[in-house]
Length: 96
Image 1: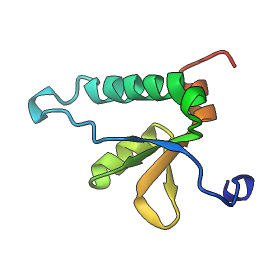
Image 2: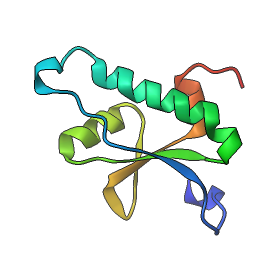
Image 3: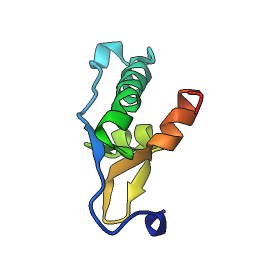
């Protein structure tokens, strides 16, 4: 993937930690929060020039959740992950 990117910094959207109270886990609320954040980022990406969404996973379980939803790890930091806007559009079933 890195070969396709320019050598200068690219714009991304950083998503803050999306957490669910332990009493509410297992109700797919985390997925709903994530997809809401991805939808909002995707809707604005052409206006701000963002090419991807970045998340910082707090722990292994959070990283597994992100990877399950197709985020990919940065090679230099296993807990920082990204998802390209192209992939987000596919996940959201947006007409290109």
